Every structure is written in C-alpha cells, then in structure tokens.
Image 1: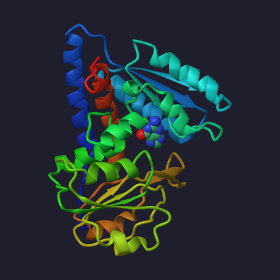
Image 2 (image 1 turned 90 degrees about the vertical axis):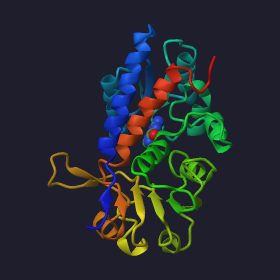
Image 3 (image 1 turned 120 degrees about the vertical axis):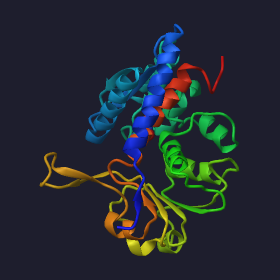
Length: 296
Ligand code: GUN
C-alpha cells in the first residue's frame, strides 16, 4: 500500500477534546450546558446507530442531548409541530432531524421548518445560501469535517482539481461549494459528478483530491485514479458479512486496496470521515449555544 492514512478517528478525538474544554469554559461562566435536540423517526437501524453515536459524543463533551422518537406513521403536520416546539424552546440550542425521513414526508419542507439559528446540520436554505455567498453560517458537518481533515494534514486545495462524486444536499453539493469558493479552504477547480455523468473515470483520473459520497461500495477502483491522489471516502454501507459478530461490515465507496496502492492519502472506512462528522456536530452545537453565528 502506498497511501498514508487520514486518521479521522484520532482527529475527531482531538476536535471533541477541544469542544469539551470550550464547553467547560462556557459553563464555568455560569451558562447552562449546550443542548442538542435530536428527532428520530421510525426504525432505521443505521439511523439508530448514528443517533446513538451522536448522543454518546454529546455526553462525552458535556453537551446535553435528548432524542424525541416518533413512529414512521407521523404526519408532516405533526412533525412540523414537534419542530416548532423546539424552535420556541429557549433551553434547546440545536435541532437535528435524522435523515432519511419516511417517504410521505418531504425532507426539504421539514428542514425549512427548523429555525435556521438552531440548524446545526447546516441543511436549512438560509445556511446553505449564506455558505454559498461566504457569510457566517452553520456548515454541514461532513463537508466541514473533511476540510478540517485536509487542513490538519496540511493538504492544500488552492489551484488543485477537486472531483466530488455524488451531488447530495448533505455532502456532495455543499462540498463543491466550500472547495470552489475563494477562501482558505477553497480555491480549487471543482468538478461535481453524479449518476448522469457519462464517463466517470474521465473525471476521477484527473483528480488531485477525490471525494466520493454515493453509497455504492467499490465504485472507485485503482484504475480510476492517478498516482498521489488524496482520496476521501464518505461512503459507509452495511454489507452482509457472516464472519463478523454483527453480520455485516461497513464498506466505503472505494475499493480500498487498489485505490490505496496509488493514492498519496486515503481515509479508511470506518475510522475516516464518520467520526469527523460527529465531532463537527459537537462544534456546531456549541456555536449555536454561544449564538456565535447568529448573535441575538
Ligand atoms: N443522515 C445521514 N447523514 C446525516 C447527517 O449528517 N445529518 C442528519 N440529520 N441526517 C443524516
């Protein structure tokens, strides 16, 4: 293997330790602890696991958290009322609706119902719009975690060709915005590929930085990348594996062995991007509690 590992697990611990120290200072000044309100709908095993990881991270850094669970039969109106309750609750700093929501609920409508000042996921159009024009905002946790990682390992983006595979609202699209803007974490020439891209390899082979976020295990192989590329694998799919205790293993979007042979840097799955996402959520929740983005 030629690539060095971008150790998201280690870096996430560092970020969390720094948030924990800041929370202590904040509460030491007489403020109540930050509070994250999670809304979890239905019984999706992966969503349950993510929410558990987020709740545990909150406990570790001194952030209060509560999960409001709702059945997957909940109507959009009922869900909006729940969100509205937390919007108006002064003891709630951040609100997170775990996605995906059931099919009968329109995710963008419910995201828009969140008070943008409490939108620690950075999915509300107000935050997306402000990010697009370089205004202070909550940035989505996965892209924010990726730039934190690049920054930590002194991987510069200026003038590089960054290729993002996947154009989701959660990762690919905001990642493209951050990397292409003229700020210290941007200045990259950015290509966004998606399911309609005709010749994916034509783009990936030219990437200096390749970010893959589609949820298709093994989509990217060694033949599709150039020597020395920095690879960020956001994919995290449960693939059946009866040799493991849980009966599955978590698999990224890259065929790790063949890609790592050519890459300069690569994130492992698990232990790469995932822990960074959770750590950045802690950071955003503290920013929300301090009213740092949207002062009162
Ligand atoms: N589902 C998958 N990723 C995310 C995320 O970052 N935030 C929320 N709320 N749901 C998700």
